[in-house]
Length: 163
Image (tube, rainbow, N blue to C red):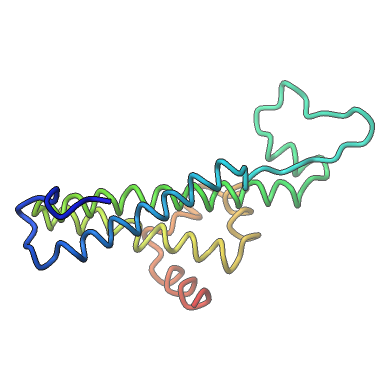
């Protein structure tokens, strides 16, 4: 945790405690993400008949899993990786936003926090309310079809369903 004397002198003193709390929360969430990786929470086990294995020449393991009877495991793997990747991405953007606010770069801080608050949070809500839909979209549609950055109504709908 950042000590008050280590904070930038640009940040007004009355905001130091709140800023330290934000950094602390950020550190806790990042630590949880690291622990999820350490404990292999996104790991899936495939149960093959006989001595079968995934062929070495397979480039898209998740697609192979869907095509070979491991749909549930493929979806679990994809959704776990999506959750941890979105969480990590969100925390990096927010940490940078906190850093910019500490240095008095308020416009940059707001710009950096917009993406995780609006877009990344919407993807997390989508994962919560329709994990099958988001994984199907990622696998079978173009990025334009599942890019939520310009789909205000869809984001609003996802947020309402997740609430």
